Image (cartoon, rainbow, N blue to C red; front, side, top):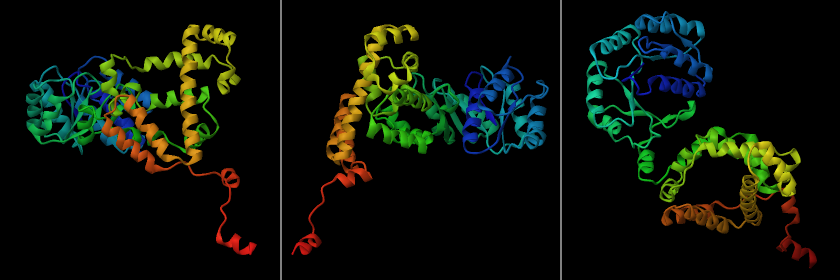
Amino acid sequence: MLVGLQGSGKTTAASKLAYLLKGQKRKPLLAACDVHRPAAADQLQTLGDEIGVPVYRGDGVDAVRIAKHAVDVVAAEQGSDVVIVDTAGRLQIDEEMMQEAVDIRDAVRPDQILMVVDAMTGQDIVNVVNEFNARMDFDGVIMSKLDGDARGGGALSVREVTGKPIMFVSQGEKPDSLEVFHPDRMARRILGMGDVIGIIEEAEKLSNEQSIADAERMLMEGFTMDDMLSQLQQVRKMGGIRKLAGMIPGVDRALSQRGADVSDDQIVPVEAMIRSMTKEERAKPRIINGQRRKRIAQGSGHTVQEVNQLIKQWEQMDKMMGSLRSMAMGGNSRKMGRAMGNMMRDMGMDPMEAEKLARMGGQAGGLPENRQQRRSRPKKKGKQQKKRRR
């Protein structure tokens, strides 16, 4: 059961929580129990349809009856093992809202009551959570809108005031932007130290045998425009450029100091230009001459200068992949580690952190040799060969 003030993001949080549970092989059901806000049920229905989760709306009048019927009847009919009850909120606490929430709680007896808190709310949130805690005794907090300018100082006070843990945080509008709260990682982000573990976890969610094979092919055979498009799509699936920038140590701070505006909108024109290329041009970008660039610009609705910039970016990425390929084939892991460290320093990372990264990269070693490389490697003269000659 989700509770909180109006505008805190309860309905959106309900759909995100359903999406998270669905990814864990659960079968959630959303119950639209906000019968006071206009179009609240329509909003939940739209969000449920986007993620493929059923929504029960009932008669749209009696919130208690809707919640009870969803838990007692509809969940069994739908084969659902989790019911998420989205309740009504107000701009400020009033007796009618609190009593309705208490009645829903008594009717369905939820396993967990989660309070949704807007991260941009100031210290006034302390009075709100105290009131909810006194009447509802909630189990934990979902902190929403943490992707804004606020750092969530007021919401972080919830833990100190009520003793209730922050269980989830939401950092975006997409269904997959809800994640489990880790205090140490949040502290690193607030201090501008990044969250490398978070990036690894996001990558692991998307990793599969095909993506691993593609990565090996890029490293050993070359980097194409199709690869560039695929990487941009992977970045979007991982939460977007802005989210990743905030998770890489020093990058978010460096971008803000330089006044750089980083957003997913910058991916759209790149996708349009790559999709305007022929199959041969995407596989072999070096054949794109002036005439081809003009055609690509016209086909994508962009200028020749923008196409030139895209090809220059591809050349830089291809050059970097070539350097990594030569280091990996040569087994020179120390050079690879130093290259990684220098790249992170250029992006604004703290020199000490970059040095640690360089050492880690150096210890990791190069890629394992394939069969062809082992055949071409000169054989060492061992004791057995010397004995045979004698």
